Image 1 (tube, rainbow, N blue to C red):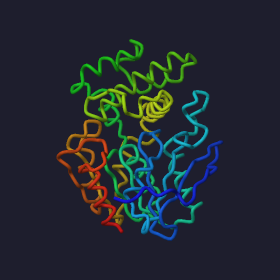
Image 2: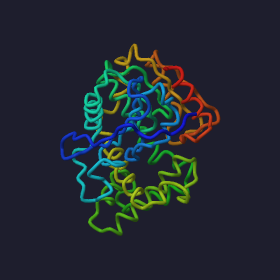
Image 3: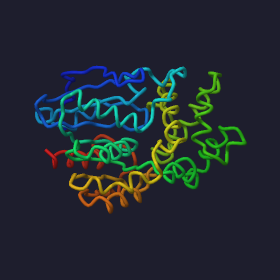
Image 4: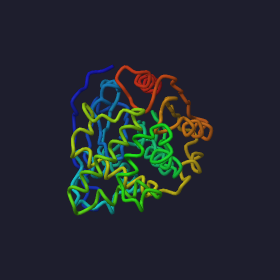
Length: 315
């Protein structure tokens, strides 16, 4: 809807543990604050969000989570330790960024993994959140990880066989994300590269509904492919480092925070059931169900239009 304005400020915030988190601010410095929590995990922020927020009205903050995007050290370097890269670390980083920027409260937006992180942050810091907009709702329960790494095989048996056969035979009936993470941290570059390729083929299938052609996607870049695979398997393999039902059990802490949940019926990677259950437990949230949408946000799509409408609602 709006021109993709350049940031008026950006920087690298030292959040401890040797981590520098990249952030940017665009729009109106005196405007209503909004912050986007990107997906992945590991994808990094995307400037397209600047087109959704009126730059005359909003003070829009984008940031790259630890090891992602322009944050350093990058997890694309296999020598970078991920010991200090957990959901709680990311929640703390977001809160340090809010404090660093002198923001009292901000609207939070973001989907997929960003949904989990937003909800976990808001549960811990409800007084710092004005509103929430989530396209593609997830909560990172073990059953959600099991669905996306194994259950979806019923829809994509050809892709699943290749995915499952990418790990050693003794690992094929266990936690596939952890098995891939071990390969992605192998000292052998060839093992790491093949694991990133195999994982990404499956990952792209779940996002698109079966199309795993890398051409024209971010997965075509081997560095991006490795960074994403290493980060996603680190989080999914460890159940996002949160208790199994942490978000569901604490949604009552969001009382009084208005929200819009937007979800496509054709979202293979994150079935509508999760969004439905979150909405039932969070009375202040409106659930928008899109019959023609999946997991991706495409320019001009019904998902994109629903996000725009939600932002307008909270002006």
